[in-house]
Amino acid sequence: MTTPSIIFMGTPEFAVPSLTLLHKELGIKAVVSVPDKPAGRGRKVQSTPISTCAKELNIPLFTPLSLKDPEFISSISALKPDIIVVIAFRILPKEVYGLASLGAFNIHGSLLPKYRGAAPIQWAVIHGETQTGLTSFLLNDTVDTGNIIEQFHFDIPPDMTAGELFEAMKLPAANLALSTCKALLKGSVITHAQQDADATPAPKLFRDNCKIDWTKPCHEIYNLIRGTNPKPGAWSIFHGASLKVLKARCITTSFHLEPGQFLLIDESFIVGTGTESISLMRIQEEGKQAMDISDFLRGYRLAREGYFT
Image (cartoon, rainbow, N blue to C red; front, side, top):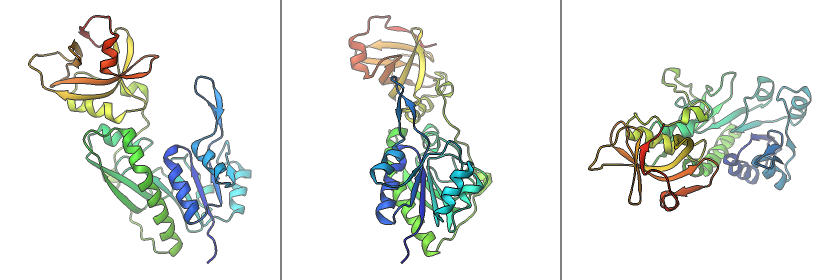
């Protein structure tokens, strides 16, 4: 059997198990990722996790500034790709995805057409979903709308964070990528169109849309905290500075707190919401490391009652 020509395109750690498994089982002809760039406080130039993995596996690596660069397109065309696999990468132009003779597909972190966009895993948690999944679909000219190949369903435990869900879905994503590649190679793929009427958006999360609105019901605030953990983080203004809330739980108390009113009592940091109160369990002050609430209270010297702003 002729070895297939498979090109893998991706960027973050989430995609590394998929690249590793596909290379082990089928062989990857080349990898495409984004260029190295400065990161962290020291602005040291760093490679993406996918670029690093490709180098470790001795797979030819492309890091084009533009996916429409004629030289890059010519290099990929020369590889005569059978399949192009895309996981957490940039939007591919037709000049690139059209080069795959058997098909170019993406692994998306939701059960499409729900949660189309850059942050499907986070939005599923923010909206309190109890189930999500992964979808492999053929690429076309409109983002996240291509015909579905396969799907994998995944339950979301009530206390799971978006970061934990990312971790839990890494290996299933790799297995789905492998099974989709095998189906394309066998010519056994039967796709079905997405129902646009059922589509929901999952845009990229920014700091501004992660600010906590304490007037909302407790369960909505709780889900926002889970869905933005670890990044970008749900936050509010506490004593004039930003305070991220990384972990919390809704509680019933014998006393009433207004939305945004906080009370530090015993070993607890309790805040009023639009319904019941919420107990903050892990936080991160601006410019400091994340800490459990017991460690925060141990060094706390300001007013033990007041309001978030």
